[in-house]
Amino acid sequence: MFLLDDILFAPFKAPIAGVRWVMSTIQKMADEELMNDQPWKERLIELQMMLEVGEISEEDYTREEAIVFQALRDIRARREAIAREQRAAAGEDEDSGIGIYTGYGR
Image 1: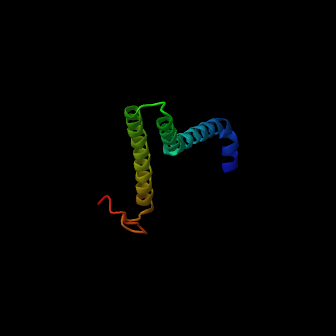
Image 2: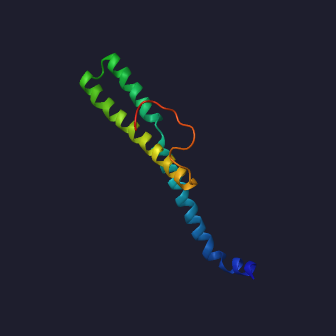
Image 3: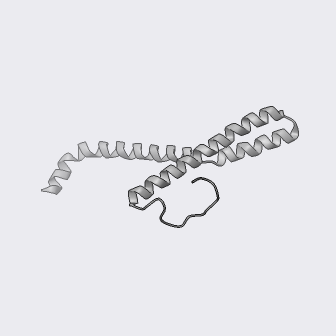
């Protein structure tokens, strides 16, 4: 009976499954883009080279550097939030596991 149901409802289920797959793929790509810090690191190197060559002033460099560092902090915060959510979903305590004390934070 279930095979018959699958065959009869295939024209309705297939488009829905296709849309779900497309949406999940778009979500994964957007998450990867938001979590990628490499372009920001490259921008920082580019700014340093521009400052050394004299293409930008010290004030411009400082302003742009602050933007880059804020973006890197935002990416790090997103990564930490996702890690916390994954630990919570797995039922782990926040203090469990191996940690590295850096002297910062709590």
